[in-house]
Length: 241
Image (cartoon, rainbow, N blue to C red):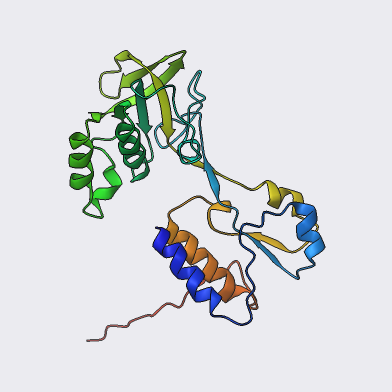
């Protein structure tokens, strides 16, 4: 995914009419002072820490877990050698990446998911078998068809999605479930200047969707949009005999 980012930056750098300010975080006041005629906010999204995801609609009691954002920022669950459950209700690649990283650092890692297999969405990209094999090779224990039901001090409870039976597991939790848009800037600017949310700031999705959203914003920038019309051309065929 870093290649996608690097490629986009490389293409933008070639444009003489585009200026980039990297690593320049701005607040609402600074954006207004900038004086732009229009603002697009692509501020991304953050992973939830309360267990809410595809299967669980309400926060899990006691759950204030670490998230992928925390792990990538350098935070860790207790000491290496301790037990960690990576709870995956995202079903893509992120949970397996986090589990493999923690296992390489010496943690005793268990990956639990409500799905029938690890990273089930990657079956569509022909990666699932390779991901599961790699996790087993680095010592990650895999527990499918289990849902996070509660988190306590130094322990968590997982429920079998078929039987409903719950069992306590020692250790801490890393929650890989759903993401929430970082839309605080949008709320602060809405109604004050022309502003639009795009990408994960509008609706968290995969990187391909974020690229599409940016391209769509540029295409529609000077166009008159009719929200009630179909935004694409339809080809109609008539069969005669």
